[in-house]
Amino acid sequence: MPWCDACDRLVEDSTVIDGACPTCGTQIVDTQQGPMPWKFRFMIAATAVYLIWRAWQLIMWLSH
Image (cartoon, rainbow, N blue to C red; front, side, top):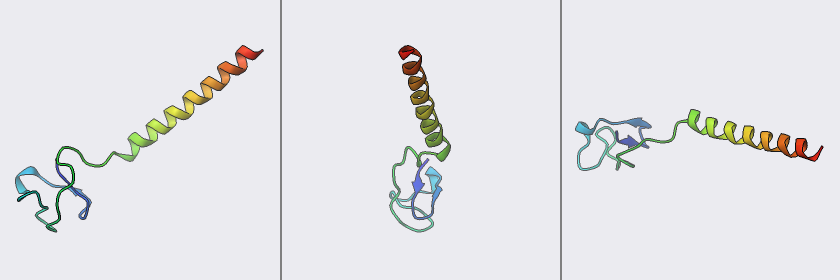
């Protein structure tokens, strides 16, 4: 679904006229995807922290 940055909302495909938002008239950003959800970013960051912690534990275990 199209995403309008000015309105900060999704716009239906049928209401988009010439690639512009029907509410404010600004050009629509990527018509395939909206912005990345904060929950997905949080999941990626938490996974990275967890893997770094597990790598640290492995290095400490191997050094003993």
